[in-house]
Image (tube, rainbow, N blue to C red; front, side, top):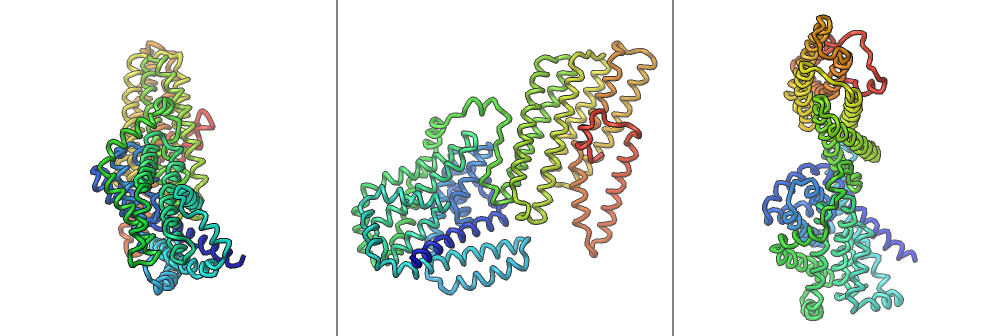
Length: 579
């Protein structure tokens, strides 16, 4: 019993090691790997090689499937290259299995010693995360050694031998067991390494090991498909094609299994090397042979998973908030950024429909604006809950700052949606004079440009664009004051065609000014971050220049801010922290 417990603990250590390596690599190089994968998706051969490289680094074909599915769901790449990348991911997993089973008994202690020292010294920095990767690699190799050591007494257990003997000759049952183990451990790599180690220890024979290896491949495909269940149909097609390719590989190898086993048993290799060699050869040949078929497979997956009507018509469904990415903060934050930008797109569409309401095209534009406000509420709630599930203690300083920036932008955009809805309700039964419509249209165009620039500043973090955004904010306020004074002057001169809309017109100008403040908030975040980055003794002149510039911009805004004016609705106050 104690020996079995030691074996299970060694297996748990193996699974934990693969998890540590995957999360460590994604935290340090997650953004670079995303760029590598997305830039390589224009051509099938490059996508295949990118899949090999990314999977070899993160040691998880499921992580590669997560990235590829997200890219296809976002429309950033076609389905066929994504399927090629998944074929490459299977080859990358096989290559890493070969590397990790080499005789490197001197390496685990060195990796653990260096990794722990580096991780404790710089826990929140990229070098510390690389130390985490070294710890994971050391644990994997140490776990394999422990499995070999604890398996030796088990080989003499008669009952266990009978259990494994009953599985021999039934490839499908062995494949099911291998698939279940890969799904339970969330790693086909761990399942293959365990199978090879058990075979090397004499616990299982070659036919059973081959069945377990094929099953582990299929299990990773099933797991990837389950992980994509929350994505739109386009994203799920990647996982479906990947699973179909793995099932096709099983059908191809079934007729050849007996002669293949007989030939392999004649090779002058240990049983462990035979299992690893089969895994590498099987995945490499299968993927290379099936690579030319990615285009037909993409068409088949599109027919099997057509786009649902709800996906075509509903905007409110989150597209990018993958819960499986929450264990990797850099990916989770990237998902939240993309979903928040979708909220910005909804606000932009609401602005467009508001212009229709102001120009007396009320019926259709008003209905669409109300629907968009409901969609905005749904997306805002989804982003807020997604970020709340992200453990902030796992974030480094830069990630924690980005978390706060995303929350702030989402809150501001939600408040903007509330203001736009209030403006629509206020103008439902109003008819504006032509000159009023022209003034509101002029201010509306400036507002739309500032929204787009504000979203660009949030995404890029470019200080030059942030300064341009603040200049646009001051220009907008000057224009708003000029138009307000002109309207009051017309009221005094009694030249309005509809004097009863005078107060409504001024309220709309005030609402637009509040919207402009919300759209420009991202500029302050970027400029403050730039000032903090320059806050070093050797850069005092640059720090003073940035502090002076930021102070001047804030003073200009304060000078332009009207005195004694209170927001009409208290709910608007939390959304205007930026002035």
